Length: 235
Ligand SMILES: *[C@@H]1O[C@H](CO)[C@@H](O)[C@H](O)[C@H]1NC(C)=O
Ligand SMILES: *[C@@H]1O[C@H](CO)[C@@H](O)[C@H](O)[C@H]1NC(C)=O
Ligand SMILES: *[C@@H]1O[C@H](CO)[C@@H](O)[C@H](O)[C@H]1NC(C)=O
Ligand SMILES: *[C@@H]1O[C@H](CO)[C@@H](O)[C@H](O)[C@H]1NC(C)=O
Image 1: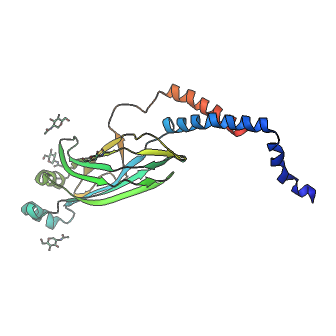
Image 2: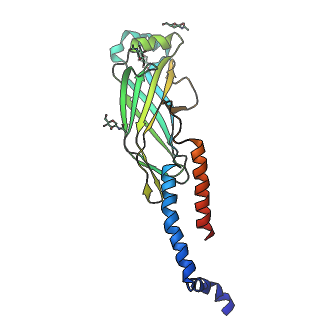
Image 3: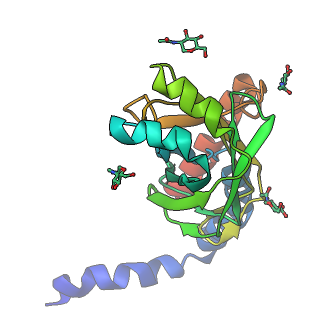
């Protein structure tokens, strides 16, 4: 009987060695903030954004008998656009808290002509989770004649979708500073009213700036983290 219980008493014996115990807690007190700081500063990957679908019913000329009707009655045409957006948190150790996400739709490949704005309300996203946001937005100032002319002769109307957000990232109980997420993509739409590309279109950072921090610096800090973590785990 006594033998069976002995494992239960082992932790008590360890407490009897207070020097070792205190050393362990001092180490934890030193390494925990370092680890948290490191995780919240260097180990953050921005969410991945994909445009799953963009659909403009007014450009859907698949019913050709109505295509001509559209030309005649532009006043009665459906000025809406439908979008389906995917936001993916690829990290398995951080969750994401989004404040409002601003979507801007443009006609043409540049940001010259805004045709719609949309605000996605902020939300919380767990580790390795995907979120979908779909809605119908009313467009304005879209040069329909031009767009319909383009798609009806077999070429494409070009749109641009931009996403701006400033999420914060959580590691355990701690939050990082808010960081800008600015991505966008060019989307070609044909006479089906839908984007030409069948696959989801990745929204990419327009800025030429590379990822934060040099890779050499990352390498050094990863070694440091590895050291810190192994010290924590060995104790
Ligand atoms: C095509 O147009 C006709 C008349 O304008 C309308 O009755 C019909 O519902 C339209 N078809 C589609 C698929 O929109
Ligand atoms: C749109 O913007 C680009 C630069 O971003 C410029 O070169 C072009 O002339 C502009 N077009 C119009 C119609 O304003
Ligand atoms: C469609 O029209 C544009 C000019 O509006 C022209 O540049 C293009 O070559 C045409 N495409 C086809 C397939 O006819
Ligand atoms: C989104 O747009 C609103 C209104 O224009 C603005 O106040 C807000 O700061 C924007 N948010 C982001 C993250 O850019």
